[in-house]
Length: 222
Image (cartoon, rainbow, N blue to C red; front, side):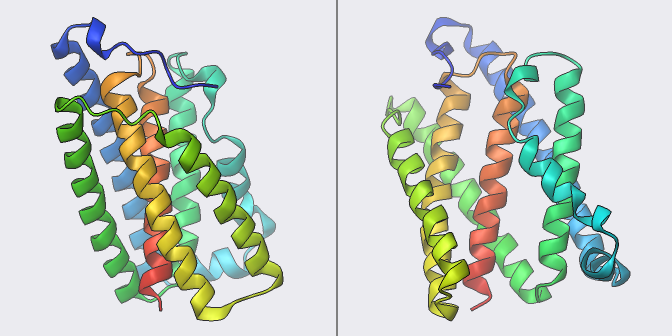
């Protein structure tokens, strides 16, 4: 599916900014839920043991998160879209909790600080670029191709591990790709998403932030 139709130049700016605030409020709640569950996993030691040695049901959130990503057929159907959003966020939060619970606390903290700084900087830049009339429609082809290359690289890592060098390379490439996705999805939020697409806009930015955080984990753990 192509990007949403351009609507920002055709509507009331007050409505557009109300839409932007709504999306960022949803995104903030998603990030708060993920941070809270991840923190609990780090400080409550039985939690990582449950994920690691518990029943197979403990892995279900990973499957649900992968299969429910971007539920486009329900993205404009209220309240089904909100229920799917909550389910998707909860599953992603449990998946993140499993990842950070097996990582050193200082590494998680450093990755969180770097991710926060990057997201704020990229968002400010994109807002400034939007006011200057800069266009980021050239990014999708570059980003999708880069993401394909990254996935192939991960497959190579599975069968031919390159050690710490390979993990570092993944971290740098992932940082560049998902920084680009944050810029692109933020520009869609400002210029192209329709008002009933707040759920899909929030999910897109949420996934960008999570993936950027995981890239920082790879870099900070070296």
